[in-house]
Image (cartoon, rainbow, N blue to C red):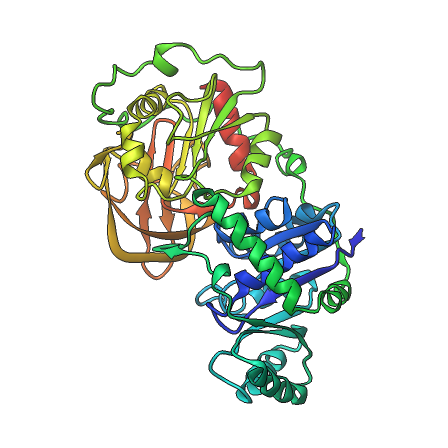
Length: 487
């Protein structure tokens, strides 16, 4: 089977060149022409796909050759692009920057080659003129398997500046497909981990995306860009399918019995832990347990494939907002709390004592709970001195140090997510610290030059700093849902 979805990869020589503005604006501009646009992002970034979704009306999806393996990049792309007229893939960092020490792995160039897609190079031209030709020539000729099909010049100062840039690029043999001037209203605010997510500034984000679309439509040759997208080579193989991914034989039962100490101090004023919410049994749809997934402004980091896999594995997935909902969804049998910014909303999360109590009771009953990064902080005893759920006997705090990078991890023991020895690749991205950094039963052993253990496995809880992409190991979703049925 082969597929020929027209597609472009938007790359740059370095971070800060304007990839997000151009990629998001191009998505919006194509969508304004009535095209069904499939949005994608290279790497583990959770925030940019939110802006992509605003621009296209479709879920933004990640393509990460480190987390998922190169063999899944094409199938995951085809899964997201089904029924679309064109796809736009925003790159990460500089075109050739990949996982540290791994060569081209997970770089934008690597993904472009896996997708057989032409690359459009976004160049920040604010401090150069004729030198732009040498820069573009170098990037276009570095790897003959990467096809740089055109350049979009960003932050151009004036008509004269544009004239000088075009004259220089005529000699480089790479066509100029767009010229953008600096426009303040398309700027998006940032903080300690990058752009502020869409969920926290929806109205302003809608205006920013519209401005990006207008700027790109005005400054770029959309017809030429669409023509370049149509020149992408055919992809062989089938689209990724969640149902097929979880259909392999299930792990042996029974699951490991509860081990380790019970979650420690519950939120102040909470009753002794009992099964279910407020001591009541958790009603379930026969055969389809309810899995509650945290959302809202504080928990915006998730991959679309996670809920698709949980649903395919037999769960009814229900989203709730820990900032506003005082109860877990009716019938909750398992809980998934992904990443986000609980440190920004620590006061509001702490003030919602009824929900903190419900989470502690659910975890205390032995129900499956999977928490990543922000979810780990929320399960701690406290965050920056404010009470959290108290599921884990650990404290969390903000720090000045950025922890960032891919991780190669192995499950230390059996848990609701994985059997001991299961290998998964993850990503860390945070400015917080948890003390202690691991429990009596750690979640992962992190391989590499400085091997360590991290995270917590207690009863049905699996909590860790590592963000993982479940499409790389669909058995995680299958195992979690099966445990929801039997706990």
